[in-house]
Length: 116
Image (cartoon, rainbow, N blue to C red; front, side, top):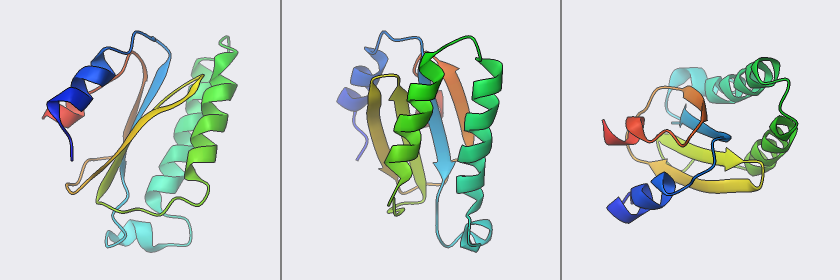
């Protein structure tokens, strides 16, 4: 369950190199029923795009590794997953019972989709 304290803790993260991932992981969603779900393809493409956009930052590889490690053996338990990752590891992951569109943001923690 998402709480005000969780949001505040995320906003207190002062790092400006955070990958915020919002993923529609619902297994009942038809595009997620393929061998490789739509959200998994989105994650791979987002990490590839992030690496090309932020090529000068050496910490991008650490973020990619932490993100990929998180998804090893991951099984969706909600309709959406929100994941925040920085070079030190996964800051937080939140399973939500509502559908959010796939999107990512790199920079400061992006909580706007959680509030809308």
